[in-house]
Image (cartoon, rainbow, N blue to C red):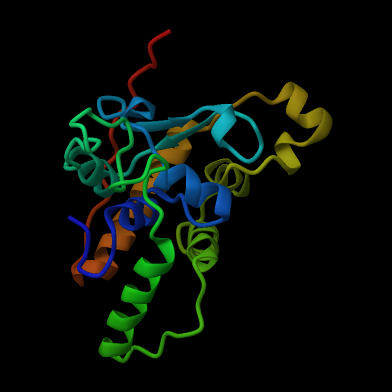
Length: 201
């Protein structure tokens, strides 16, 4: 369940590690059921919906997986089932990022935690920083989680290195998901890694 004052799309986006450049906001807000494999605990974004025009597989942490599994099947005004996971009344999926951030800002202000002047992209910075610093995840794994093509994947290196690092990414995102839920619930959580089922050909 999403915390009060936040949308399910926002919570999924944070706990899955997919945060916040515009292309990624659009990708998660416009997430389709056909891109989600609950059995394999993955989201697979096709090249047409990624910034770098490459397929991007997102291993889902337990919190993100539970949230996606709980989403009702949405329908169009004529009753036709919609493929979009999030959003109502829009063929583009969820669009209310600014409104959701304003609601979250209001909740933060009520809690008087001293957090202000932040932007959505700070979720992405927080993810990268925590994985590198707190959880000691290897830089190339973090880059793969963020969908970056640089360093180990750039230029000639990318021609030879086709590794997806899915197992490493899943372990890292399970730790991130547990960390997010600890912050939300105020109680420690142990990360649980779901075994990755092979994708159907």
